[in-house]
Length: 260
Image (cartoon, rainbow, N blue to C red; front, top):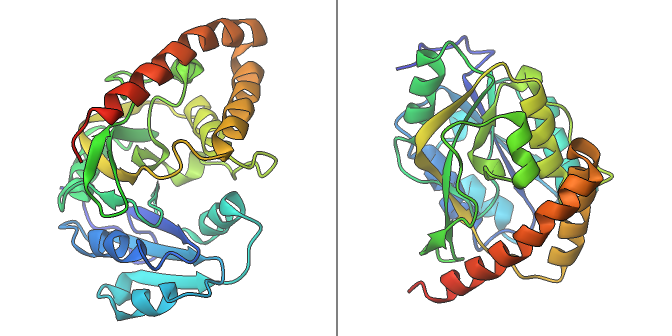
């Protein structure tokens, strides 16, 4: 088990971005509170919600480790950058409204991997998809590999952003020129600066699957193509996308066959 850090530097900064999230924020916060490992701070970065999001958060336990900031922002990645600016932990976990830790021991598992591997640059694991009620939908269509390198993200976002836990000191700000895929580009830059990446060999996150087929998906894929082309080359990226199309439709078919 990880040793306790000084009060000014917890092992983890868990950052949750919210905006009018009254239907989903409770299970996210309760997931954090229920963790058996308690060397963390929980930062809520709220975009000036007009519903009951803040009042719900205020009724939940765990206030001694939770700090809420609420003000207008310029979108998701601007809010994430605000969280980065306020974080004090050695490692970062982004757990947005609707997402939750897979089990009560998830933080303890990640902490053991950190300490047992001499504080690596990144710890990562698998992700399950859930619906708005928190019920299992299916596995993520990209499976995290047991050996992860910078070049592997040329094949897509192999690790879900929420299950990707980097050292804070190697984590850059998100590029707000991307509206939908800045998290993918951020992970690539973290990988560029990581000396070692450790696989946790477990499902770490239950990820809210809403938005998989929304109107923003096409814009997100276009952004991701631009990012891939910049880091991994245009022609290799173009050829890979011929395979991505087939992979995506196979995943959609498999999700339809999963009993919710």
